[in-house]
Amino acid sequence: MTGNLHAAAIVFVCAAVTVALRALPFVCFGGKRGVPRLVSALGRTLPPAIMAALVVYCLKGVPYGTLADGARQLIAAAAVVALHVWRRNTLLSIAAGTGLYMLLLRI
Image (cartoon, rainbow, N blue to C red):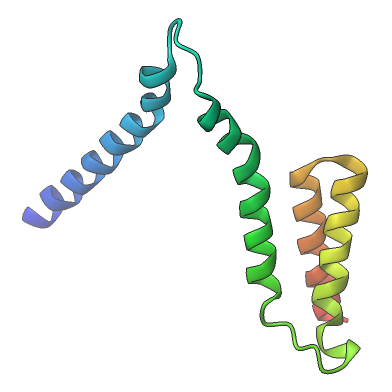
């Protein structure tokens, strides 16, 4: 029984922290108070910075000895960039790039 009580306590704490984190921006910036310039600037700059870090992480293991070694990864990455520049749809870009990479792995 203590195992079930322990699991229930963990779920409760996780749920409470999630609700608190979701409510925090409304508590801090709700009402007539405006969003500080620093927070607005972080909101504009962090998403591209995180995406760039993910790209570096995904391509860090690509062997650059010959073109054939890392061609699959580079082709898929180029497709993601091209689709995102063309359509400006992150979900489409990532899904299509992942699908293309999986297809290239099977060829």
